[in-house]
Length: 341
Ligand SMILES: *Cc1c(COP(=O)(O)O)cnc(C)c1O
Figure 1 (cartoon, helix red, strand yellow):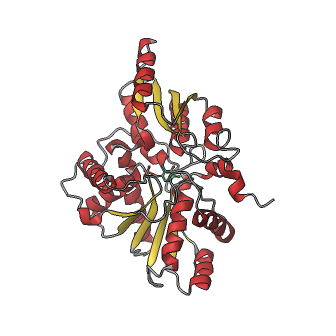
Figure 2 (cartoon, rainbow, N blue to C red):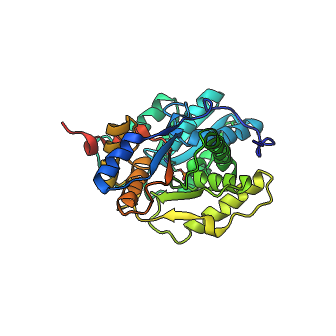
Figure 3 (cartoon, protein in one colour):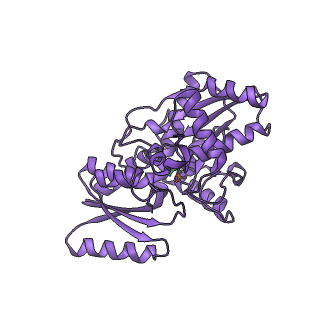
């Protein structure tokens, strides 16, 4: 398949192709409970291979590639206290020999005992980041501008990576993923109707939509919103970022608004706040397939997919691919949701 992105500098971080596997025991358990269930496959982007894995590693191949091309010596990024993106960025920086600053905002109202000490927050420290924690109401722009200026004044060359690594360059990682998935589907002679995944800062879905447009695929991409409580601008931003990504890849096709699918029904009380469907989905997938999802993204998205299956939204002979975007370290930050002792 043609490499649409050959002109962009890329720093390799992903350990080869991630597996595309069937989940027959999950399907059997859902069919038993709900009467019918589509064929279920899982694309294992939790196994991208860098310090706990996850979807940000694909974006970081292009973002770190760009940082190195610009001769940066320090990477700055930002997110919530339990950000998987920040953990993967700090790991990528370590591997590339760059310093890393993690600017974390305590924005999630969840009050679990381990939330402010364990999980990704602990791993950021193990991976050697300089960690800055700010309260939810701090002004993010001012905080980041100040830090960039301080690093510059001290003679450093900082490179800023936005929340979730979600600009067109980061999204390019998911154009590549779409091509990889398409070639696996061809080899396994599979024709799924839908690709379902958790969506938040929109880079993953933008890249997939761009990859879909560039390759002329008709696979429907369903992002399950786990992030925003106000949806008004989300679809517009997604379409805009997908189009920018097509253009970055040198393509001339248009992404159609009709191809933008955001499922807003499964967020619950908000980003990072557990739902019953999430907890049940994390347990069910762990106990039928031996696969660990996470409480904030992939578990909520799987909870949404299972709810939709229970509502009869897919035919039993359809094939659905779930994209596992990672996040397993987050389980340790939500200990009391899962502990049965
Ligand atoms: C960031 C993240 C997502 C969402 O990806 P976006 O590109 O930000 O929409 C999904 N799952 C996990 C585990 C993540 O860390």
